[in-house]
Length: 418
Image (cartoon, rainbow, N blue to C red):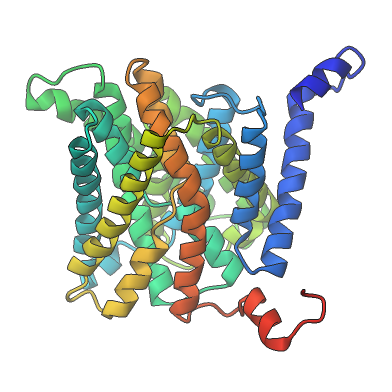
């Protein structure tokens, strides 16, 4: 694609530049692929987006530089902020008072995932300064993939809600520790305060931005209707502003959006109507985010040793999440079978993991390439496989109101299927 466009560059003069044309066409193909895959096979649209992005990345598409920076980094953070704002708005803090075992479940699966992946990678011969960032990358589940799967399958129920809550909480831990860890990777900690200080800076700045965002929206809701389209536009523009400000001040933009939504949920506990009105703008940002992640992740260099380490990381992560959710399941109000489906729904990795990996690569030119060499293939693989596992878990839990397209076609003997 790049060679063809360079040949025509002296004649082509689009007002927004060649990269805009490339991305527009790529997103158009992704939209078609996602639609066809969901309609004829029943898989979520995100799988189609990821496949298109992967093909583009393998073909040498240069519109997504690595490590992430500039406009690509802002768009990824903005897409994440919108997704996490919606996810955070589904977490009433009062719920944890009535069911504190959900927090225990969250801590257990997150801690076990980190230490299991870290220990296994060190045992396989990786250095500590490489294994620790990779363990933080593996810690995060993907609320973005999970919420898209839930939307495509029209799922609702205890497994769906708990999976979203646990995935969102693991994202909170991963963003805080990942952003702080990236600052510390080239600075050996001498005392405990050297380790705690970056965490407090990231968390403190994010909380301040989150509080301003939540209070501004709460004030607006006093005289604006929550069902108004203008309220949705206000939300989107404020989240975009908070994304830029949080990143500039040294905080985490997605973390600020997540905390802002949780705080706003406390101040305004009524069900939110505006996510329905975000509509096409939110959908376009989400699709762009998935295509960007897969395009970047597909640029990684593979080898036999890297493939083995990637599979080891994924296996340790899957086992740790299942065991962690099971350990915290006692007294949480869920059955053991539901716990299995919850853990399965938390398997996808996507944009959060890519953002954390990019931070480590930018901060450490020495160890960054080694981290990316393992993290990028793992993210790419689990964005596709994780979405499929998540879909299967939701259907097995019986919480989808939409029948599986492939199963329906096979059972009815659709003559158009061969």
